[in-house]
Length: 382
Image (cartoon, rainbow, N blue to C red; front, side, top):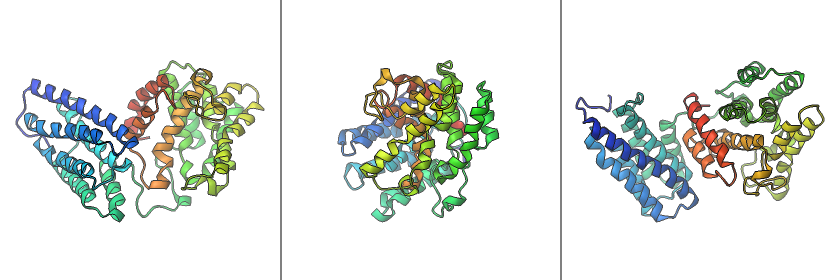
């Protein structure tokens, strides 16, 4: 059943409600990220609680009372956190923001921006899921969180009966040679023999780990897309080569290091941090790929000088590396962490996490460009 009633609120009332809600939604986005860094900050919890409570109180003015159960359950969740009987976590943060995102899609609909598809039946299911989180025992809490996230954003949770890694297939952008060439040509790149060789290496590279399946095409799409929005500030062909080859050195790490879920030892960290040099040196031995090699070597440097291998600062890092650093981290948040927690960050949370490090780990200028491209790509669930 649709959430909307036959009664229509005055246009001015809807506009005022929407403006106030969007402010509350933005506040929740910002404060939830801050809360992840400081989970015991009572002031942040109270700010989020008041934003949700205020939105709930205003629903009657625009005839959206069917949303009340959802926001009440979010309030109850926040109350449990306020009282110290539930520990705030990244998963709980995702549940709250995705619930607000659900409300936002309805507000977008009543202001004439699309069809939310949200029904009263769906709201009841989500309410029940959140109630299960509130009532869950410690040993069942994570599963209750995952179930709720899976309802709100079905693409984010890996099923309990997971396909064995060797049988798992990526359901997103295919990384076959034909599709990679298609992406390149879409951006005006006609692959030469060198690039065709790089493309031929992608399949064996991705077979090295089940968590790499599909990453080459996803990252190529993002790096070239961001560069296009910026007016191709970076040579597209060099950027494409860097995107395809930047993690090639990871192939030569021991499997137990690649798939380790515990904290890496200092020795293992040093092994991992050597991977940019492998691809850098390979491209350096070929003609005409010096800039692609530079991008690869710098893509783990941070704007604040705390990256590796040379602790370069923002002015010393090339634009191609600034792009690739964002894309590589975004893809890791969206996909690679799944084998650790059995749940991937929803798209919107992954975008927020990139923004969280704008100006410190990532270039603020390129984060803005990333945001523009992410908004366009969101509907494709890459």
